[in-house]
Image 1 (cartoon, one colour):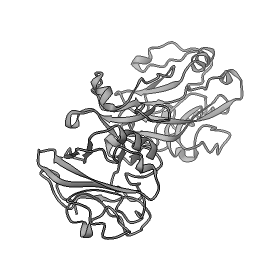
Image 2: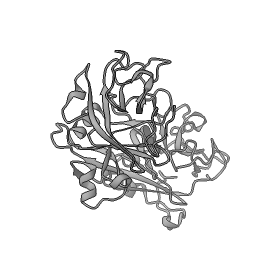
Image 3: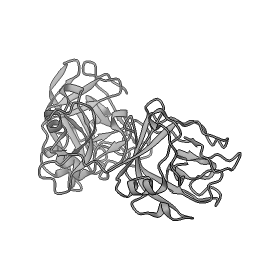
Image 4: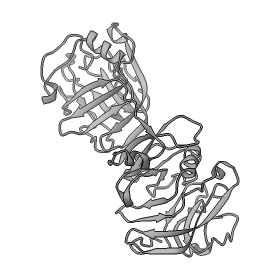
Length: 380
């Protein structure tokens, strides 16, 4: 297993049996900042902590540990509520190492780092038929392109061919925006570190769209269309991969800072159609951070096929949005016909984007299109 004490020779790049000694692994982990798990075929997971922590606990017999971590798959999917754990005792049948969603339940002293029924494991060790201390690694829970292998297989040997690696934390160089990263030569969409001008906090990671409409777009929010997802004006950050159209948003402070330094907005839907708007989503002041606030701006909207509307408005509200009206883009000015839906036109008329999720009135978002613009088609 990964916690085996003695070194084993082999070529891990060919997915052969191989391990360093416990002393070597503990020393590498103590100087590390991240872990990598690569499986045959190329899919991988990264974890934002070293496998065995930064102390020498691995060298102490009868020891176990688990750490809260963020896990990311090779396609950018992530889980910020994960745990990674290891044990060097009571592992005859498995439970030596695992990465999973949520904390380990430690339901049995026979498998300390194996959740009951293997539930939630991105990596688990369960090789119970012979109980001879060897490892059998599998995946119960998929994460993006890190696919499941076996719900809870206990046969000798696992289905997961992989190697594990540790490196020091790689500090991502920050820039004021995704556009600055693009100008510096970064042309791949994905995660980057930014520090917007005037932002009082430290640098933070965002997803950048480096290909659509010239690239350089800082993604501030995303929805999948499922129930219960927060609106574009939601205050708190939500983890997810917006490039996969998962539920995701930055904090209000981050969105306000990005908008203050912005000049345009982009709205991309699954399938590739998009709208560009010639103003930033939340204006160039900090109004978004003030409770009980709304605003609308005259804008020009263009669709991905070049169709345009120079008589449009874009607006947002952070109050009276229990049933919708948090954000919209439409032909003409918003009529503000109801204090219950400030940025929702009567009967949704003219909306290129509207938010209306009134059945539960629980403050989540429901975005649709009433009025088509070129290849930006109506939905409802």
